[in-house]
Amino acid sequence: MANEQQSIHGVWASRWVFILAATGSAVGLGNIWKFPYMAGVYGGGAFVAVYLVCIALIGAPIMLAETVLGRRGRQSPVNSLRSLAQASNASPRWAWAAMIGMIAALMILSFYSVVAGWALDYILGMGRGAFAGISGQGAAARFSSLTDDPWRLAGWHSLFMLITALIIARGVVAGLEKALRIMMPMLFVLLVVLFGYSLSTGHFMEGVRFLFHFDLAEVPAGILAAMGHAFFTLSVGVGSIMVFGAYMPRHASIGRTVITVALLDTLVALTAGMALFPVVFAAGLEPSAGPGLMFVTLPIAFGNIALGEVFGLLFFLLVAIAAWSSAISMLEPAVAYGVERSGWSRPSVTAVIAALCWLVGMGTVLSFNVLADARFMVTDDTGWHWFAWTDSGGRTFFESIDYLTSRILLPLGGLSFCLFGGWVLSRDALREELSLKHPWLFPMILCLLRYVAPAGVIVVFVTELFK
Image 1 (cartoon, rainbow, N blue to C red):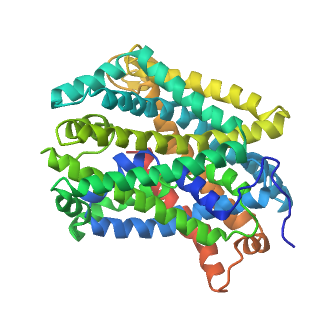
Image 2 (image 1 turned 30 degrees about the vertical axis):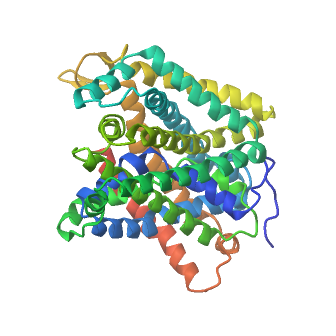
């Protein structure tokens, strides 16, 4: 008999709301500043094909496992794993995997909020016409003036975190669902508008060729990159998908839903590339990746082509919406657990957790200015140190948090959820949640959960750890 337990936090109105939530969690800054560039330099269409295979073998199975565990447990990730482990006669210590994932999500949110604040600053700058005719040197100086100013960074960080907390505090239906019903369609509309604008630049085909040229010779160098991005892009390993799965309606198909989210995430990344790289080429610039693309290269491009500042404003609005949709998914697991654990009201729990997250984020704010020379995890001739005040070697606070979460905690979380779904959760429970129509699909999914996806995560983990 199906597990009829319901979440105390609420349930999504339909499967499509879960799709909006999971897609919002998956679609973030990496879709805009990383994936399109990787596709361009690692073989174009050939890389995309390899990436989709990696999604099918690594990302999607872990996402499926998280969704199954969430809907089966109907609680926060920590309590879901604890109750499911006990029901399967396994150790309740499995709950620590979700606890670590929850902490990792908050750590990521602490610096993600700071970076998202940069986009808010650039929305204001584009609206004021600050980038009209800007040079490369001017764009770099503009970005440096932002990161060098702790008060400015702290202000935008505070605003971003406050809005995120207000959405979460209102609850699953009145807060998350209502916000996602507005933000995600707006994100797609803005993306389509920017795509349409790229068609008018005269360099659209140049951008398409950069993204989709089919070069098999570059693929071997990009396989590990494809594996890594396939894991990280779907927002797995931190419990966000698990907590969203806890709010998923019983009748919704998990398999079809996960496939839809994975395809939408990839579609957004490719469309972003087709919308942005023609703009870059139209301004006579070279494509790049990372913050340099978003906050230096693109502002130059938008500032030097017709109607560029108007569409530049729309672009940074798109970035902010993508960041918010991801941010609420990082805060929700901890808030859900806090409500279940403490019995406090959701607004009170949200306020406390968001405040702690904001405080940790101030370390990232100061990493770019006041504490730029404060280094953690330093090694020198005398050995290894937690902290040293130096202008070289080691990592800043921001870099340390990023390293710890992306290279250690996320892969371990994803591996744990996959192993739990494949080995600990009973076959009957897994089969019941998946409700597969074709009998041959279940053995295939079980094989992916037990062997293929864990092996892929271990490769990603080892690669990222020693990169």
